Length: 68
Image 1 (cartoon, helix red, strand yellow):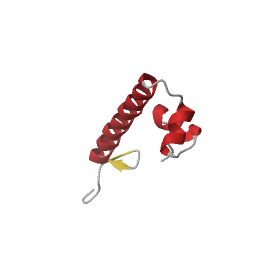
Image 2 (cartoon, rainbow, N blue to C red; image 1 turned 60 degrees about the horizontal axis):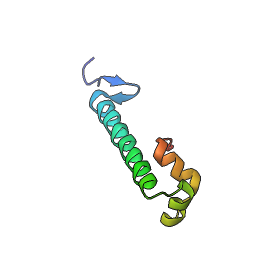
Image 3 (tube, rainbow, N blue to C red; image 1 turned 45 degrees about the vertical axis):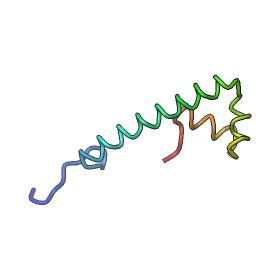
């Protein structure tokens, strides 16, 4: 069909690739935060207090369980 865009899961193909790359970067960032925190011998709760978020939120960042 003329004017129809190819989609994957409701996203254009380029957007789908971008979202997958973005998810990978966020997962890498969460892993780096976890490594840094452990090197500093901090718990998730301690780091969360330092940066002003809940421990649950800190856990979600490290595990990439953030809601979209």
